[in-house]
Length: 518
Image (cartoon, rainbow, N blue to C red):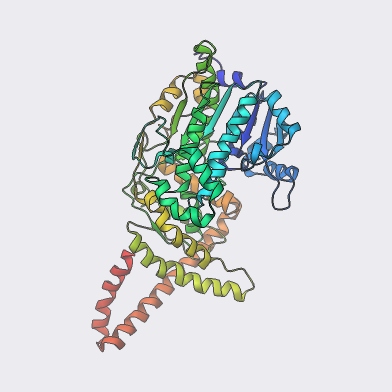
C-alpha cells in the first residue's frame, strides 16, 4: 500500500457514516476522531433516542458538550459539529424505531455503518440482553441490506463474547445456541420463567452479556457474503492512551471506576489477584481499529474482484502482546492517588488488593460498611443524600457474577490486528495507531488517575494545591483514628482476658497482622 499519504482518510472523504451507540464511551470517542482527523467526512448520522424528558436535539446538544470534544473546541474546529446529524431511534425497537423519512435518508446516503450499541450490564436479564444485543444487531443488519451505497459494516463486539474459552483466536466460534429458539423463549416466557431456565441456556457462558454478544456475531457473519463486514473485539476498554488527551475517560467500568472510588477514600479493598494478567485496551486504540476496519474490508472487496471477502475479525487486546499485571503497579498505585488527590475526598486514600473473595468480604465489613454507615449518617444529618451503604451493597451483590472476570486469566491472540497495523501506510500507522508496543503501563495509569480526577470526579487541575493540603490533613486524621482504634483494642484485651498492660500490648501486633490480611 502507499506510504506517502493516508489511504484511510481518502476512503472516508465525502462519505456518510451511521453510528449506533453514539453517546457511549466508544461512540463519542469515535465521533471525535472522525471529526478531528478526517475533516473531509461528509456526514455522521447518529442513532439517538429521546429519554428522561429530553428531546433528540437536547441530547445532541449534551453530546456536543461532552469533554471528548474539548480538544476540537480548543483548536477552533466547532464548525465541524454541524456534520453530526441525529436520527431518532433505538436498537431495542422494531426497525430501530426510525421513521420512514429518516430511514429513506439513510438508505440513500450511508456508506459505512458502525454498530456500537449494546447493553453492557452483566446482571441484566436474558430478555433485555437478547432484545438489545442480539435483536438490536439483527435490526442493524436488516437496515444495512437496504442501504444503496453501503461499503462496510463494522460491528463492535467483545473479546469476552467467547469467555468460555481462555485461549481465544480471532475466529468466529460456533454459535452457543439457535438464535431463533432464544428469541422465541424471550418473547413468550415471563422474566421469572426465563430466569429458571437461564443457567441451562447459558451453559458455559458466565452471563447473558457474553452469550448474546456471541450470538450477535453470527448475525453479522450471515451477511458477510453480501457486503464487506468486520468485527472488532475489544477487551476491557480503558482511558485514552494518546487521544484526544492522555487519560481522557467518561467510563466508570474497570480500573477507572475503582480508581475513582479509591481516590475519594471510599474504596479501600479490591478483590483482585495482582499476579493475573488483566486485559486492558485504551479507547483511542479501539476507535482507530473501528475506523481502520471499515476501510480495510472495503480494500479486500476491491482485491476480490468487487466481491466481499471473508468476515474479518480483530482482537483489540493486550494479554499476549503487552501483558499487564497489577503487581507491576502495586507499589506505585497509592502514590499516584496522593500525587493527584481530590478536594472531594472523604477519607485518606489507601487501596489494597485482596486475592480472595472471602477475605475481601471480611475486609468490606470493616473497611467499607462500618465507615460507610457513619459517613451516611453524617450525610443525612447534614441534609445530604446517603449513598455509601447502597453503593457497597451493590458491589457485594455483584461479586458472584463478577468472580470469573476477577480471577480468570484470558489469552487473546491479536495476530490479525498486528498484521493489519503493518499493512497500512506509514501515515495511517501514525494517525490511526493500532500497535501498543510503545505503551508504558506506569505512565499510562498515572495519566488514567489524572483523567479520572478531571473527567469523572470533575476536579480541575487548578484545584491540586488545595487537594494536596487536604490530603495531608486526612492523613493526620487517618493516623489518629488508627491509634485510637488500636488503643481501644488494647483496653478490650485487658478487660476480656484480665491481663496486664504489657501482655495486652503484645497482642496488638498479632491483631494488626490479622487485620492486614483483609
